[in-house]
Figure 1: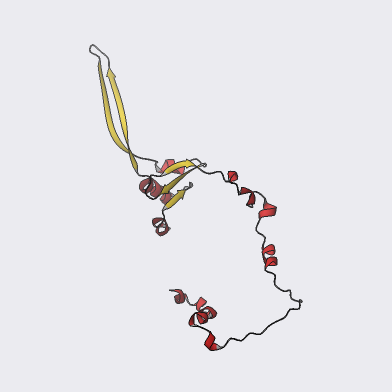
Figure 2 (figure 1 turned 30 degrees about the horizontal axis):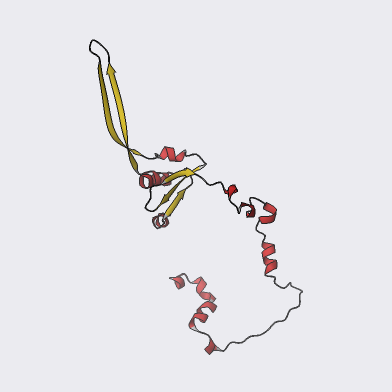
Length: 161
């Protein structure tokens, strides 16, 4: 999985609880940000005193626990060369082509294998059809044709190396 992630220009994190993924996102994608913390102190007595202290701290943009509890309607998009985006997920029901999905209409839009087969209809068992015999001279076949016709290569794992 990490090989694929390493070669991608964009990665979309939709949420999840898998520990190594959350750790990778928190530490390597999001990184840290510098925040300023200001503390104030005041003491009262005979001589009142007041102090103010400013510190710069590094903090992860989102800790692993914040990522694990990220709301379900949020996602993080990381595009190469840009800081990550934390945004709302797109509502697919608002897409103009949503009406063509099986979720919108299970009867009309669901995949139907029988309809697909009917489109590329094959003759039935008792159906008459004409059969033509075709012969191709051996000199007409190229090496590439031979490779395509040689189905034994499919069983040889080294054939595709």
